[in-house]
Image 1 (spheres, rainbow, N blue to C red):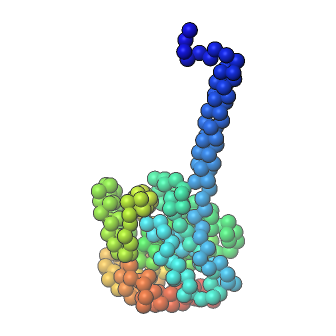
Image 2 (cartoon, rainbow, N blue to C red; image 1 turned 135 degrees about the vertical axis):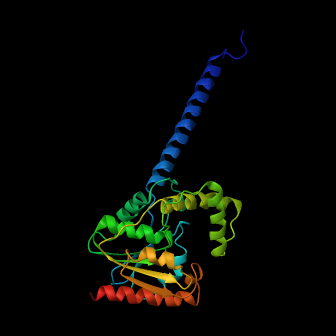
Image 3 (cartoon, rainbow, N blue to C red; image 1 turned 45 degrees about the vertical axis):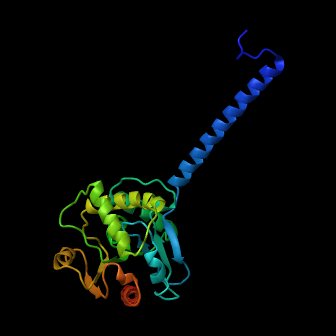
Length: 268
């Protein structure tokens, strides 16, 4: 007799039961994976930083790192009556990190913004690469009152960096923000950074039908400003550099400049 074949009714019943249990476990794992995939696909990028207030909300798009953390302190300085929302990369919230062009990123974020504000002209902004995404959102929507571009420097021609270059830039970016990442956090954040940098550096911004204000820092290079002349209506210099503009005492001056520009739009 074969030692592996059930020889009694009880052994046969147990074998059938084990088979059923294995199939149930496999089905459970499959359903969990499907739910996880669906959740990743539906992660909203919209983060309410200060939802209260009667003024038109300001929507601020993340920089290439994907995080909206730099906007938290800024939102608290824009006034009790100014609602502020931020757009964070879903890849930092468990969503799938996708290699896509900047127009596709802008379209997804615009859909989320229009869910929060279905009607009326939008007030958009963004730091670094976020400024380019906000500008593209304005181009796609067509009903935008102002785009506040915070120290966004785009290249004269598209750039296609390799992985080693991106890792070097990522390390420099984290150092500039004073962030020390462990191995797990690096593995989570670097793919988001790399995807956004590639989208940003491969994109060429174009003029939009909205008031565009560039708030650049004191160390901005003339070539960078010259490329913005055809795209913006106003250039305003704020203290600090690309990173310290969000740190005290410079963040207070940045907030004042934003309040003034938003007030100008409101009285038009």
